[in-house]
Length: 356
Ligand code: SF4
View 1 (cartoon, rainbow, N blue to C red):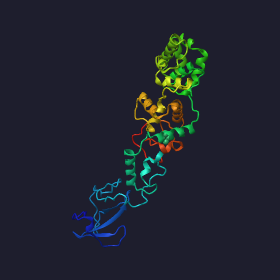
View 2: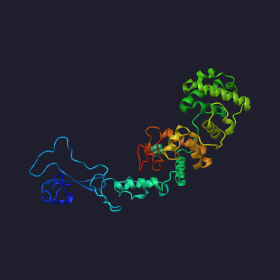
View 3: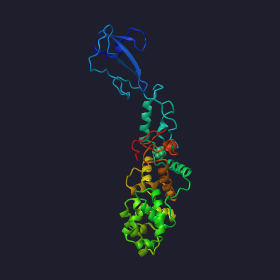
């Protein structure tokens, strides 16, 4: 609109040269304005007017700021471009390689290297509402395949020589690093070689030996209590069934799954620790926050024979590349399958809900 009389833009008549700063005269009030043309991110021409009139270099009053086009391109007066008729400019280009497995990736709807910004936004919406299924069989299979390639034969990082040692090491690993536990356990098992030795202890006697793993009072009670129950109820042998393992003090599904899967080679469930939780969320394999529900979600989409291996691979992935802070996405074999909101580098769209 003319800032003086309110005439619409088309009423301006070109008077000067056809340059970016040509002079225009309002057909209504006959006042002159310098016009600027710019191109916004969606390649739409936007007009706005300078604050000076010809022959009258009067400044705009202090504090009055001329309107600027919105960065989103949704500013007043921007014309909408019919779908499919957007000009192919050099403004924003889609990132390459964004097609997920089976062509269901969020970039599948756009021609690589040509879509303007508005089209990219549309592509994201389409991908999230239709077509894109993070639990699609092909996608999950591809994730498993790449994990196999990256972490062949992954296994538990806790040092152990028998089921009892593995059980103790797993109890001690809560809120502690495997490295710390592996420093503590060799001395511990040298001092108390058998489950009966642990069963004969009072929790306070064990505390100094495991203090450096943290939460040592509770852990002492759990280890001594588990030893007593194994000696009294299971003849000194660590049971190889989920139900029985869950009766031991300090043993929940995570510890039971580690023991069953790693020592007894039984796929009774999937270990869900902090790494598995974080990566399941980043890869959109589960939206739950409760460990048992995450385990149930994963058990539905991972083949049973892979449950133990998958957990170990994901735990290694969480340690090596997909750390809680600053994941090394640029080196990640799952990169173009991952839409995590906190990725540090990406060739695909980010899904805001894919949070760790
Ligand atoms: S791309 Fe990044 S966030 Fe996604 S799994 Fe790989 S390391 Fe983790």
